[in-house]
Length: 450
Ligand SMILES: [Zn+2]
Image (cartoon, rainbow, N blue to C red; front, top):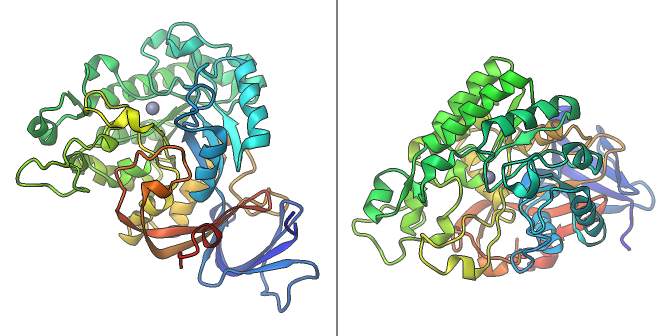
């Protein structure tokens, strides 16, 4: 058992929730934060382990509002244990598990099972999201009150939208009493019609059935009107289009109870990645094209969309970065683009992916960390993602300048489905501390890492 008393000394402490951005020491004891000291300590208090964090950033552990842990039911893709280990490697100390499991998380019994197993198996905190409708079939509401009592932090049929507007109206109405958001997968199925990638010149050239950007915007527009009608609480997941951003911006100006998230891939990768050349546009369609690891829902969008979402994240229209970590086995991806499963394995690369925005000065490092800590904490309404005294000692040590090359074979996730294999990223999680104990240490795991 590691010493429970520790000083993380001399790092640049960034805690956006408290407005802290300065070189300081962080004291932890008994799994909790004791304080962020103003004055540098000459010597560690007696009995404390000391970690030299000079040159590193020290921040609250990240919170992911959108994680597919695949457990129960699809344990060959991911488990609570492997998914939370991947989270720890990515700097996340809280993940919110999406309910499209088997059985799906539409009853208190399943939620309690997930939370009970997480308490013994998980490397970091697991919070659960309940289904909106029974069996995620979009017809009859799940027992939302019972799910709320079981501890869910919101409701979602993610993977599928609630297509029936009246069912969505009822679900949003319940949120006024329950105070928890409806997270509706924003996609109008009647516009998808078997489409597998973004509608545009790349889909045309590759001969793949397209999904228009308006499939997202139509659903977001409907949901915003229903939030206005009911006074309910709406959280829009994985916003991927400029049109979606404009609708959310307008909804916020109307004072509606609407929040939104964006994924690392929709912030940084556009539809040209489907060519399989890491964003290069070839003269002729290459052998690498139809890279099924780029197939995701919503699809990778146009370069104009990929320019619009970071702007919206910087100006607060989009509140948080959430991963939509969607692990899939090789058998789901080694097939045609049409047949491949939707989803990208994100947790272990997320921080380095979004650091691109900081390196390109689209937003500052404290702003980015806020979108991974203070903002998701506000949406959860829980005292997480902060280094306040008495908060759980959930802490990440980051090296924003360190470069590393993604190797899917090294993932601690059970799945390997990333389009970033072999890509060099800048920004590294050095250590993740969960409730005062080390959940990930890059030096120990990868001795060659600098
Ligand atoms: Zn979704």
